[in-house]
Amino acid sequence: MGKKIVFICKRCGNEYGNTFKDFSEIPKCEDLHGKRITWYCKNCIEDRQKELQESAFVEEYNGHNIYINELGGYHPYWGSHYYFTTLKDCRARIDNKTCAVVSVGMFGHMNSIMK
Ligand SMILES: [Zn+2]
Image 1 (cartoon, rainbow, N blue to C red):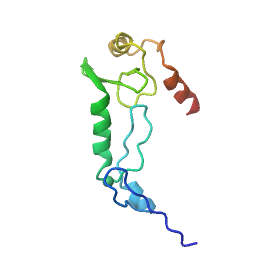
Image 2 (image 1 turned 45 degrees about the vertical axis):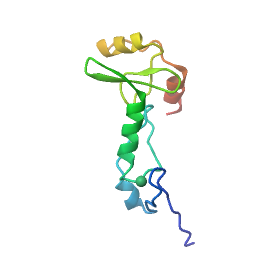
Image 3 (image 1 turned 60 degrees about the vertical axis):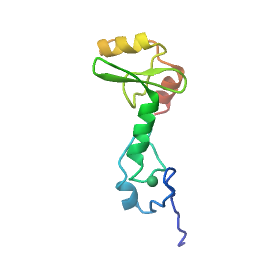
Image 4 (image 1 turned 180 degrees about the vertical axis):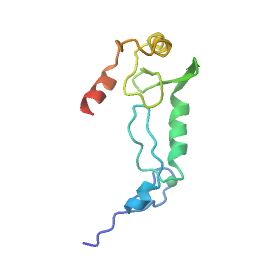
């Protein structure tokens, strides 16, 4: 009882609270795989997402931003649960949104199973 948990922001090192209200004020940001980014305060989390997006950005194609993940797979948009092993396939997906996802990388595949 009375045990206090303090959360420290990974970026600025400030405490960012220990109540539900504190957490509800933090904007929801996702990483490239669509996983919630955690351990950042509300002042830092959007910057962190922007940093991640800038470092993973490949190109803009037909108005869509394509991002590359740590395994060299191409995501057709930020937070997509699947990716393509070649840029060509990724562009084809953007060109034709109704086409089947064929060359899904293993990581994205496992991710969707575990959801
Ligand atoms: Zn912070």
